[in-house]
Length: 345
Image 1 (cartoon, rainbow, N blue to C red):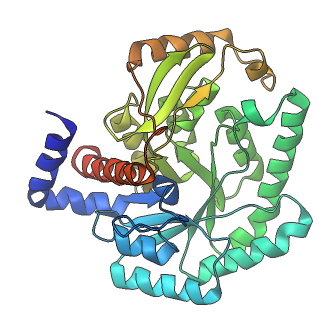
Image 2 (image 1 turned 90 degrees about the vertical axis):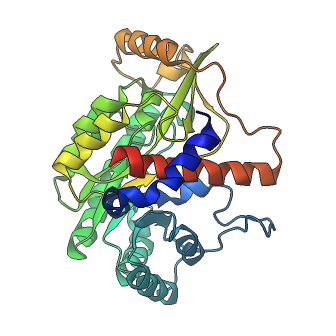
Image 3 (image 1 turned 60 degrees about the vertical axis):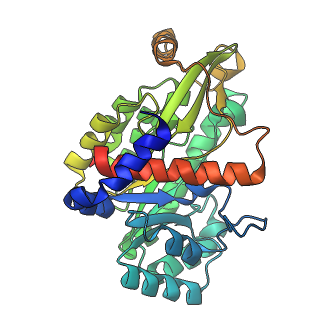
């Protein structure tokens, strides 16, 4: 059965699994990263119009089968926050925020304004990414260690206000922390207000096993990024990219079960980014600069798995028109939502 036929069959039988769909809607969300092309897009299209703010996004996804969205809150006004709360109540949806932690004391004022605005909107859970791809961002181990210290200080700086507001922030494994490093930071902060945003695929870029990462972070999880990944070998290591759920190589059923078992109320936010594959240059010397004691066994295990899971070609967007990318983005999201509702919950 091809992609179009499978999606059509899912849509045609949706009414027969209303019970599981209701459970899925209560648990399944969507990140703005899934709409990289449409979110705050600077283009004009009647067929696939851009989303100007969170209200446009909520209007669009209301009928797609998701119960929440995860969005940046940095530009929100108090008026927008009140409208978001009203829309949530009207649509029976929830919103999670995405926030930058205060990396220095001087940033505490900005952080507090954003958190209080989020509170006004009814937001209880937020996600934060503190770094980027460490193998691209840092060239020396010392530079990475300096960032890690500052990241921990930012978590400690943010924790008291987050606790007072009775909110929770999930720190994402964002191709920056190895899982043991993130666990150490969360243990050091030791607060219910500071947990993990568990991304299903990111840690693969650090030669970690996705299932084991999810299992390790599950006790600290407050939110999650649901995705599937396709991989392929390349000259300097391997490529990885998000693909519609069920079309990649991740063990989604076990990963979801591992999270939901310990965190039954957690929301899994689809992060289906339609883009060019990322290259993980793990066969270059520069890639290893920030790692103190990563074993060659990790490299061998990962490349063996990638070889076993390799797809002949990975989806790419280069050379596609803007409209074609927009339509592909929408199709990837629709497929993933229907797959999740039918097969994952």
